[in-house]
Length: 453
Image (tube, rainbow, N blue to C red; front, side, top):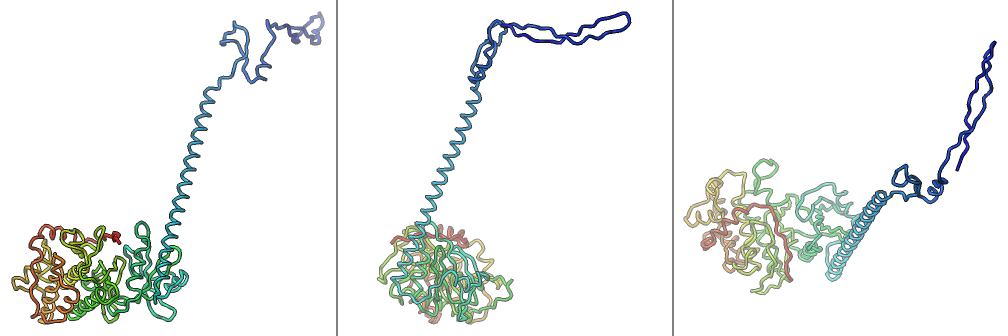
């Protein structure tokens, strides 16, 4: 095939007198192909045009465009995008299921509490969340914080000052158990030495308990004071004895005075509140258990509950006996020893002589030898100290059967020291165990478990 190309060529003529530039003429040049070009058709078909094997000596041809790498890249991108989409989809589905499960559990817990409140005609007033915010002035003044939640100062519309406990640890195995325990145990109790429940709130996820306000906080603030807080008054041994008697009366009422026996399981100075007259009131019934008042009734427990240092040995191991109301008696005995030995604002011989030794055992050894505890005070105070320690040693007997009831404890505290008999040695065969407890005695960790019904 021949294709004409017209190219301009200049012709110049010379004359004798002048140079004459002639106009431009065109001549034709021809380019030949052996075959007709097929590139246009190749491109239309989406292929490439060129010599076979890129060798100019070979004829032209159409070739498929090399798209292997592009296709592979596209496949990888599509696979990654699809995998990411599937992952996000499953994540969204799991999130929705967990949220629905949480909402379902919350609704079930809410229903349980509502059914409980309907079956129990309680005197405490029920408040809404909006009313709760008004009572606490939008939770302005915080009184304390614990594993259960937070406590805020508040005031009812009638001017009565209250303490509002917000329960914020309601997940997992709790299922609102702490809230129900509090309401079930003290909702209908009116005793001088038990804190009074004035109201509550159950709305959505909000669980709140409203108590009478205790202006002097808790007992631990006084017996564990190191003297740095100048606002704390010195209670004196007579007042401390009155406080111990008041706690014993409250516990005796829980064990014998109610329709059902109430086991507290967390008697400690932090849970003993003091009003404006320093009257003690037992509080925090989140670990409490109701049972019958049969003489030999025992409580089945999945594991230990309470605060380290106050938990009875049988709560740790059934080898020491069965769990019963005597477990509360043990905790009370440890509280009495804290009253005697935890008074940090007085420098005593006790603080140096008991270093590295289990304090209750040191107390027993001193009293058994007829020695005092080295506390510098007046004669009346020494008698009170001796009485409190002797009663405490009866309460912390390792065998629950050897411990008195709270009624017996009350009689000992209200009687004369001369009539008290020295308790048996509770540490004769428990040296290794007592040493272990000594290491963990002051730990703040609380062991909370579910009681078996």
